[in-house]
Image 1 (cartoon, rainbow, N blue to C red):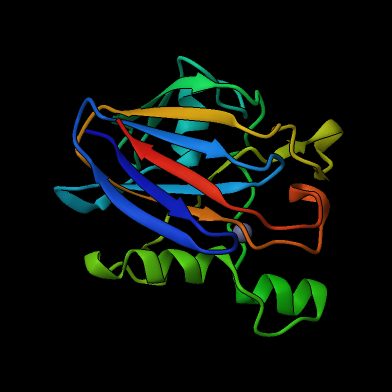
Image 2: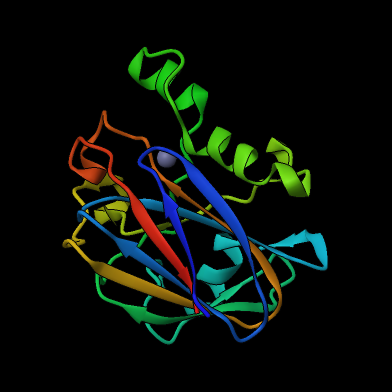
Length: 194
Ligand SMILES: [Zn+2]
């Protein structure tokens, strides 16, 4: 029995994975960045941590076979499929202030608000949100510079993450349309729990 969840462009959805289940994340139209956060379902104070994951991998960019760690360094999820080949673990989720300070836009949809909405059932507040794994986001850091480039994801490109413990997960189809990361447009992400 496969659970299917559509994440409409610019919004987020959350669900629970039991240990051993796989979350399939499909880039329906291509180029769409999908911000991803996860919490230990049994203790929401333990969450996916990009900073701890970077230390354990010894690389900035995760791919097939890599284990994503929590803020207690526990392996939480394993990258079991990666069609796109480039994902980011450095850039903070977009939030109301990203659009206000950096683009002069108020009231823009954003991943931080999306996660709070999607995770309302679990009572997650903004300060509890970990920084996300930015699936399909094509960043580079040559000589310490921070470069935002268009996603390498083609239509239908898929990532699969296998849960190693029971987790609450949320995916935001990032509403950023003011820089090139998603090709200056915002499209749907499709989820399946296998
Ligand atoms: Zn975003």
